[in-house]
Length: 447
Ligand SMILES: NC(=O)C1=CN([C@@H]2O[C@H](COP(=O)(O)OP(=O)(O)OC[C@H]3O[C@@H](n4cnc5c(N)ncnc54)[C@H](O)[C@@H]3O)[C@@H](O)[C@H]2O)C=CC1
Ligand SMILES: O=C(O)CCC(=O)C(=O)O
View (cartoon, rainbow, N blue to C red):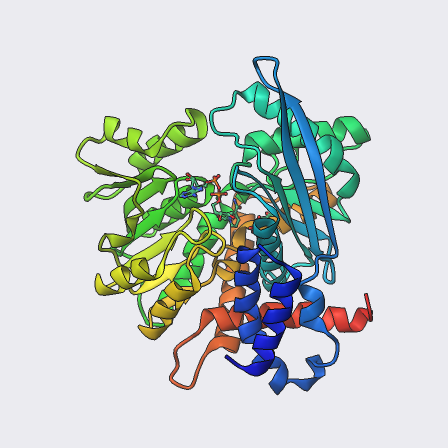
């Protein structure tokens, strides 16, 4: 490891003990940026990376609510406001029992570079709670959301910080959060994105992360003169990102073989077609059931308890569940089985060791901060529509999303192509994301 990189990482590690996910995300970015700064001295002597790893602000608060039995429950709420150099803080809220400061700082840090890549004026942030919506009634979720917003409202605003959804936060939660903000502030403004269409949401926002991942995959394949037609795809997750990645991939002629949840995965050798996907959407979004219930309707499929789909044979892998869900041995199994492309739908789902395997084997690999940026980009479009008090059609939003994903792909190629012609999308995304934020930080002085 380069001496300067080591010394930088040692300092970050000393200052952030017990934050492995955050250090992992910083390591990946610093590996690309430190050599880039060497070659571009205008970025040196501003302590840019040192500043970027310090959140501008972290808010942590108690969330007290009463469950359906009348018992008091206590959770922890957070908002990490990481960087506002190029726009108001922007990034999702995650409700999951694993949520802690390390996970939210890694997500907020990634968000800074991702949001910069979108070409829109969006700073980076992330928040959430260790609250687990699984198994809770709608009323319990509503009471939790109301209590969470009763503190969060004072830290956000449409020109300050605009949260959205992430794991465990979908349309239902955004609705309850928005309602409480409006009640407290007595104003109707676009302080959250991912809102329902009837109260200021954008068409295509629910679909955007998954669709964007597929548009990005399509661009990667095109660099090899290839297409999605008849490609077999292994998808993990069965939430928002996974569902719409599957929908768009099916539309473009691909065959989806797997989907999963935190208990296991299903494998359907005949492919999960549009009708089967509708069943999964109903199962997950309305009944809030488990993926193994797929077999009740489609008994020819198989279910693999406690396993991830990466040992199956597929042309393409799309990890769309959570961080560090695809390990080195999974990457090796995918390569051995002929996988040619990995498009991260989730944030940091592949470990650094897994990414090394993909790079070594010249698998096309896109990091989440590039290939899942369609979600936050469309959130940016939702903010624009809210400011204009106007709404674009689905076709208009989808066209803008395609253009943004295409531009992100081009930016990654510009900064990531090596002498052999292979594109290191990790390096490309990190440098392209860094440049805009760094230029803004230099222009704004010591802040
Ligand atoms: N919703 C969005 O617009 C965006 C989401 N992402 C990322 O995509 C990923 C998925 O998010 P969503 O689909 O929105 O969430 P979701 O809550 O709709 O779905 C999450 C999925 O991941 C699975 N999962 C959660 N924890 C898991 C674990 N420990 N092991 C295995 N599976 C697990 C769940 O069972 C579910 O299928 C996350 O990494 C999120 O940060 C990234 C960009 C935007
Ligand atoms: O739409 C947004 O603001 C945030 C989406 C998000 O959390 C992400 O890109 O990871």
